Image: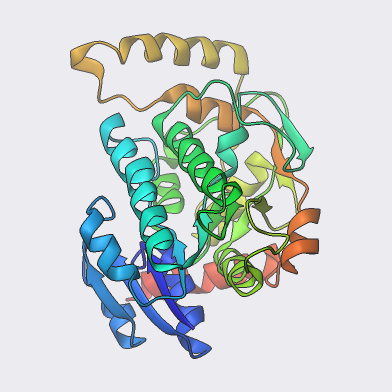
Amino acid sequence: MRVLVTGGGGFLGEAVCRRLAVRGDTVRALQRRHSPALAALGVIQHLADVRDRAAVLAAVAGCEAVVHCAAKAGVHGRDRDYEEINVSGTRNVLDACERHGARLVHTSSPSVVHDGRDLEGVDESVPYARHFPAAYPRTKAEAERLVLTAAAAGRVTAVALRPHLIWGPGDPHFLPRLVAYRRLLWLLGETDKTIDTVYIDNAADAHLLALDRLRPGSAQVGRAYFITQDQPCGFGEWLNLLLRAAGLPPVTRRAPVGPVLSAARLLERLRRLPLTRHLPPLMFLVEQASTAHWFDISAARCDLGYRPRVSTAEGLARLTAHLAAENAR
Protein backbone atom coordinates (compact mmCIF):
# COMPACT_ATOMS: atom_id res chain seq x y z
CA MET A 1 0.00 0.00 0.00
CA ARG A 2 0.97 3.68 -0.16
CA VAL A 3 1.66 4.93 3.37
CA LEU A 4 2.78 8.27 4.80
CA VAL A 5 4.66 8.23 8.11
CA THR A 6 4.79 11.58 9.87
CA GLY A 7 7.90 12.03 11.98
CA GLY A 8 9.55 9.43 9.75
CA GLY A 9 13.02 10.55 10.73
CA GLY A 10 12.37 10.00 14.45
CA PHE A 11 13.07 6.98 16.62
CA LEU A 12 9.72 5.24 16.18
CA GLY A 13 8.95 6.76 12.78
CA GLU A 14 12.13 5.41 11.21
CA ALA A 15 11.46 1.94 12.61
CA VAL A 16 7.95 2.00 11.12
CA CYS A 17 9.28 3.23 7.75
CA ARG A 18 11.89 0.47 7.73
CA ARG A 19 9.29 -2.24 8.35
CA LEU A 20 6.99 -0.88 5.66
CA ALA A 21 9.77 -0.53 3.10
CA VAL A 22 11.18 -3.99 3.74
CA ARG A 23 7.82 -5.63 3.15
CA GLY A 24 7.34 -3.74 -0.12
CA ASP A 25 5.00 -0.87 0.65
CA THR A 26 5.45 2.51 -1.03
CA VAL A 27 6.54 4.73 1.84
CA ARG A 28 6.53 8.49 2.22
CA ALA A 29 7.84 10.33 5.25
CA LEU A 30 7.04 13.83 6.45
CA GLN A 31 9.74 15.33 8.64
CA ARG A 32 11.71 18.54 8.96
CA ARG A 33 15.17 17.27 8.01
CA HIS A 34 16.51 14.93 5.33
CA SER A 35 17.29 11.42 6.60
CA PRO A 36 20.07 9.42 4.91
CA ALA A 37 18.72 6.27 6.56
CA LEU A 38 15.30 6.77 4.94
CA ALA A 39 16.90 7.63 1.62
CA ALA A 40 18.76 4.31 1.71
CA LEU A 41 15.40 2.55 2.18
CA GLY A 42 13.92 4.32 -0.85
CA VAL A 43 11.48 6.33 1.27
CA ILE A 44 10.09 9.45 -0.44
CA GLN A 45 10.78 12.34 1.91
CA HIS A 46 8.61 15.43 2.29
CA LEU A 47 10.66 17.97 4.22
CA ALA A 48 8.11 20.02 6.09
CA ASP A 49 6.66 20.67 9.51
CA VAL A 50 3.47 18.93 10.64
CA ARG A 51 2.21 22.38 11.63
CA ASP A 52 2.17 23.35 7.93
CA ARG A 53 -1.35 22.39 6.87
CA ALA A 54 -0.73 22.76 3.15
CA ALA A 55 2.38 20.58 3.33
CA VAL A 56 0.51 17.88 5.25
CA LEU A 57 -2.34 17.91 2.73
CA ALA A 58 0.14 17.54 -0.13
CA ALA A 59 2.03 14.70 1.56
CA VAL A 60 -1.12 12.68 2.28
CA ALA A 61 -2.50 13.06 -1.26
CA GLY A 62 -2.47 9.68 -3.01
CA CYS A 63 -1.83 7.70 0.18
CA GLU A 64 -4.10 4.95 1.44
CA ALA A 65 -2.97 5.31 5.03
CA VAL A 66 -1.07 7.52 7.44
CA VAL A 67 0.94 6.53 10.52
CA HIS A 68 1.14 9.68 12.62
CA CYS A 69 4.29 9.45 14.76
CA ALA A 70 5.30 13.12 14.68
CA ALA A 71 5.14 14.78 18.09
CA LYS A 72 7.03 16.98 20.48
CA ALA A 73 8.08 14.61 23.26
CA GLY A 74 9.97 15.05 26.51
CA VAL A 75 9.53 17.76 29.12
CA HIS A 76 11.68 20.63 27.85
CA GLY A 77 10.19 23.38 25.72
CA ARG A 78 7.47 25.97 25.51
CA ASP A 79 3.87 24.96 26.09
CA ARG A 80 3.03 26.74 22.84
CA ASP A 81 5.26 24.37 20.87
CA TYR A 82 3.58 21.32 22.40
CA GLU A 83 0.18 22.78 21.51
CA GLU A 84 1.12 23.59 17.93
CA ILE A 85 2.91 20.31 17.16
CA ASN A 86 0.91 17.76 19.12
CA VAL A 87 -2.57 19.26 18.84
CA SER A 88 -2.63 21.52 15.77
CA GLY A 89 -0.33 19.12 13.90
CA THR A 90 -2.67 16.22 14.63
CA ARG A 91 -5.64 18.32 13.50
CA ASN A 92 -3.84 18.92 10.19
CA VAL A 93 -3.24 15.19 9.77
CA LEU A 94 -6.89 14.44 10.53
CA ASP A 95 -8.09 17.01 7.99
CA ALA A 96 -5.77 15.58 5.35
CA CYS A 97 -6.92 12.01 6.02
CA GLU A 98 -10.55 13.09 5.80
CA ARG A 99 -9.99 14.96 2.53
CA HIS A 100 -8.01 12.17 0.86
CA GLY A 101 -9.80 9.16 2.36
CA ALA A 102 -6.72 7.80 4.10
CA ARG A 103 -7.07 5.67 7.22
CA LEU A 104 -5.02 6.73 10.24
CA VAL A 105 -2.90 5.01 12.89
CA HIS A 106 -2.19 7.63 15.54
CA THR A 107 0.69 7.29 18.02
CA SER A 108 -0.49 8.36 21.45
CA SER A 109 0.94 7.69 24.93
CA PRO A 110 -0.13 5.97 28.17
CA SER A 111 0.67 9.25 29.93
CA VAL A 112 -2.77 10.47 28.82
CA VAL A 113 -4.30 8.43 31.67
CA HIS A 114 -1.59 8.96 34.31
CA ASP A 115 -2.88 11.20 37.08
CA GLY A 116 -0.08 10.81 39.61
CA ARG A 117 -1.47 7.64 41.18
CA ASP A 118 -0.53 3.99 40.70
CA LEU A 119 -1.83 2.34 37.53
CA GLU A 120 -1.51 -1.39 38.09
CA GLY A 121 -2.63 -3.67 35.29
CA VAL A 122 -5.34 -1.29 34.08
CA ASP A 123 -6.93 -1.62 30.65
CA GLU A 124 -8.23 0.96 28.19
CA SER A 125 -11.38 1.59 30.22
CA VAL A 126 -9.36 3.76 32.62
CA PRO A 127 -10.36 7.41 32.04
CA TYR A 128 -8.16 10.25 30.91
CA ALA A 129 -6.32 12.04 33.69
CA ARG A 130 -8.10 15.07 35.11
CA HIS A 131 -4.88 16.97 35.78
CA PHE A 132 -1.66 16.93 33.80
CA PRO A 133 1.61 18.13 35.36
CA ALA A 134 3.29 18.79 31.99
CA ALA A 135 2.45 19.97 28.50
CA TYR A 136 3.41 16.68 26.85
CA PRO A 137 0.77 14.40 28.42
CA ARG A 138 -1.86 17.15 28.29
CA THR A 139 -1.42 17.79 24.58
CA LYS A 140 -1.13 14.09 23.75
CA ALA A 141 -4.45 13.53 25.52
CA GLU A 142 -6.04 16.35 23.55
CA ALA A 143 -4.65 14.98 20.30
CA GLU A 144 -5.91 11.45 21.05
CA ARG A 145 -9.35 12.82 21.84
CA LEU A 146 -9.40 14.61 18.48
CA VAL A 147 -8.56 11.39 16.66
CA LEU A 148 -11.04 9.17 18.48
CA THR A 149 -13.82 11.76 18.27
CA ALA A 150 -13.28 12.11 14.51
CA ALA A 151 -13.38 8.32 14.16
CA ALA A 152 -16.58 8.06 16.22
CA ALA A 153 -18.20 10.70 14.01
CA GLY A 154 -17.27 8.77 10.87
CA ARG A 155 -14.93 11.48 9.59
CA VAL A 156 -11.92 9.16 9.44
CA THR A 157 -11.08 5.50 9.90
CA ALA A 158 -8.63 5.78 12.78
CA VAL A 159 -7.09 3.99 15.75
CA ALA A 160 -4.76 5.21 18.51
CA LEU A 161 -1.84 3.26 19.97
CA ARG A 162 -0.25 3.98 23.35
CA PRO A 163 3.29 2.52 23.32
CA HIS A 164 4.87 2.83 26.76
CA LEU A 165 8.45 4.07 27.30
CA ILE A 166 9.95 3.00 23.98
CA TRP A 167 13.61 1.94 24.20
CA GLY A 168 16.25 0.19 22.14
CA PRO A 169 19.14 0.87 19.74
CA GLY A 170 19.05 4.41 18.38
CA ASP A 171 16.98 5.88 21.23
CA PRO A 172 17.68 9.64 21.12
CA HIS A 173 15.62 10.53 24.18
CA PHE A 174 15.59 8.52 27.38
CA LEU A 175 18.85 6.56 27.34
CA PRO A 176 21.15 9.49 26.46
CA ARG A 177 19.66 11.54 29.31
CA LEU A 178 19.87 8.61 31.69
CA VAL A 179 23.57 8.23 30.90
CA ALA A 180 24.25 11.96 31.09
CA TYR A 181 22.57 12.45 34.49
CA ARG A 182 23.29 9.05 36.06
CA ARG A 183 25.45 10.55 38.84
CA LEU A 184 22.55 12.74 39.95
CA LEU A 185 19.97 9.96 40.03
CA TRP A 186 18.25 8.62 43.13
CA LEU A 187 15.64 5.88 43.28
CA LEU A 188 12.45 6.99 45.01
CA GLY A 189 10.82 5.13 47.88
CA GLU A 190 11.94 2.15 49.91
CA THR A 191 11.07 -0.30 47.12
CA ASP A 192 10.56 -0.10 43.38
CA LYS A 193 7.20 0.61 41.82
CA THR A 194 6.28 -1.68 38.94
CA ILE A 195 6.29 -0.40 35.36
CA ASP A 196 6.29 -1.83 31.86
CA THR A 197 8.01 -0.59 28.70
CA VAL A 198 8.20 -1.54 25.03
CA TYR A 199 11.15 -2.38 22.80
CA ILE A 200 11.36 -0.34 19.60
CA ASP A 201 10.79 -3.25 17.21
CA ASN A 202 7.71 -4.36 19.10
CA ALA A 203 6.31 -0.82 19.04
CA ALA A 204 6.84 -0.67 15.28
CA ASP A 205 5.24 -4.10 14.83
CA ALA A 206 2.13 -2.90 16.67
CA HIS A 207 1.72 -0.01 14.25
CA LEU A 208 1.87 -2.29 11.23
CA LEU A 209 -0.56 -4.74 12.79
CA ALA A 210 -3.00 -1.90 13.44
CA LEU A 211 -2.51 -0.56 9.93
CA ASP A 212 -3.24 -3.93 8.33
CA ARG A 213 -6.39 -4.57 10.39
CA LEU A 214 -7.86 -1.07 10.23
CA ARG A 215 -10.78 -0.87 7.82
CA PRO A 216 -14.08 1.04 7.86
CA GLY A 217 -16.34 -0.70 10.35
CA SER A 218 -13.60 -2.86 11.86
CA ALA A 219 -13.40 -3.41 15.63
CA GLN A 220 -10.30 -1.22 15.90
CA VAL A 221 -11.93 1.99 14.62
CA GLY A 222 -12.16 4.67 17.29
CA ARG A 223 -10.29 2.67 19.92
CA ALA A 224 -7.05 3.18 21.83
CA TYR A 225 -4.66 0.34 22.72
CA PHE A 226 -1.84 0.06 25.25
CA ILE A 227 1.33 -1.41 23.75
CA THR A 228 4.02 -2.86 26.06
CA GLN A 229 6.50 -5.70 26.53
CA ASP A 230 3.96 -7.37 28.84
CA GLN A 231 6.90 -8.02 31.18
CA PRO A 232 6.47 -5.64 34.14
CA CYS A 233 9.48 -4.99 36.36
CA GLY A 234 10.65 -2.53 39.00
CA PHE A 235 11.42 1.01 37.87
CA GLY A 236 14.90 0.95 39.40
CA GLU A 237 15.53 -2.49 37.95
CA TRP A 238 14.73 -1.19 34.48
CA LEU A 239 16.98 1.86 34.86
CA ASN A 240 19.86 -0.34 35.97
CA LEU A 241 19.34 -2.81 33.14
CA LEU A 242 19.72 0.07 30.69
CA LEU A 243 22.81 1.36 32.51
CA ARG A 244 24.31 -2.13 32.45
CA ALA A 245 23.71 -2.28 28.69
CA ALA A 246 25.70 0.96 28.44
CA GLY A 247 28.50 -0.53 30.55
CA LEU A 248 27.79 1.74 33.52
CA PRO A 249 27.34 1.03 37.26
CA PRO A 250 23.85 0.83 38.75
CA VAL A 251 21.97 3.47 40.68
CA THR A 252 21.64 2.33 44.30
CA ARG A 253 20.89 5.48 46.31
CA ARG A 254 17.32 5.92 47.50
CA ALA A 255 15.37 8.93 48.70
CA PRO A 256 11.98 9.10 50.43
CA VAL A 257 9.14 10.07 48.10
CA GLY A 258 7.48 12.64 50.39
CA PRO A 259 10.27 15.24 50.59
CA VAL A 260 11.03 14.87 46.88
CA LEU A 261 7.38 15.51 46.00
CA SER A 262 7.36 18.55 48.27
CA ALA A 263 10.47 19.94 46.60
CA ALA A 264 8.98 19.27 43.16
CA ARG A 265 5.80 21.16 44.10
CA LEU A 266 7.87 24.12 45.25
CA LEU A 267 9.84 24.15 42.03
CA GLU A 268 6.59 23.95 40.05
CA ARG A 269 5.53 27.22 41.68
CA LEU A 270 8.89 28.78 40.85
CA ARG A 271 8.40 27.82 37.18
CA ARG A 272 5.71 30.49 37.00
CA LEU A 273 8.33 33.19 37.53
CA PRO A 274 10.01 34.69 34.43
CA LEU A 275 13.58 33.77 35.43
CA THR A 276 12.79 30.13 36.22
CA ARG A 277 10.47 29.17 33.37
CA HIS A 278 13.27 27.09 31.86
CA LEU A 279 12.97 24.54 34.69
CA PRO A 280 11.46 21.22 33.56
CA PRO A 281 8.07 20.13 35.00
CA LEU A 282 9.58 18.12 37.84
CA MET A 283 6.23 16.91 39.17
CA PHE A 284 5.72 14.92 35.99
CA LEU A 285 9.18 13.32 36.30
CA VAL A 286 8.77 12.57 40.01
CA GLU A 287 5.32 11.06 39.49
CA GLN A 288 6.62 8.84 36.70
CA ALA A 289 9.50 7.64 38.89
CA SER A 290 7.47 7.06 42.06
CA THR A 291 4.25 5.42 40.84
CA ALA A 292 3.33 2.14 39.21
CA HIS A 293 2.35 2.26 35.55
CA TRP A 294 1.87 -1.05 33.80
CA PHE A 295 -1.03 -2.07 31.62
CA ASP A 296 -3.24 -4.95 30.52
CA ILE A 297 -2.62 -5.45 26.79
CA SER A 298 -5.34 -8.07 26.27
CA ALA A 299 -7.18 -5.78 23.86
CA ALA A 300 -4.11 -5.34 21.66
CA ARG A 301 -3.56 -9.09 21.66
CA CYS A 302 -7.18 -9.76 20.69
CA ASP A 303 -7.93 -6.95 18.24
CA LEU A 304 -4.50 -6.36 16.70
CA GLY A 305 -2.90 -9.78 17.03
CA TYR A 306 -0.07 -8.08 18.91
CA ARG A 307 2.56 -10.22 20.61
CA PRO A 308 5.87 -8.75 21.82
CA ARG A 309 8.12 -10.50 19.30
CA VAL A 310 11.36 -9.37 20.97
CA SER A 311 11.64 -10.24 24.67
CA THR A 312 13.14 -7.78 27.13
CA ALA A 313 16.21 -10.02 27.51
CA GLU A 314 16.73 -10.14 23.74
CA GLY A 315 16.15 -6.41 23.41
CA LEU A 316 18.75 -5.69 26.09
CA ALA A 317 21.23 -7.97 24.32
CA ARG A 318 20.67 -6.08 21.07
CA LEU A 319 21.01 -2.74 22.86
CA THR A 320 24.24 -3.84 24.56
CA ALA A 321 25.75 -4.91 21.23
CA HIS A 322 24.65 -1.69 19.57
CA LEU A 323 26.15 0.52 22.27
CA ALA A 324 29.39 -1.46 22.28
CA ALA A 325 29.69 -0.99 18.51
CA GLU A 326 28.98 2.74 18.88
CA ASN A 327 31.65 3.11 21.54
CA ALA A 328 34.16 1.22 19.43
CA ARG A 329 33.92 3.72 16.59
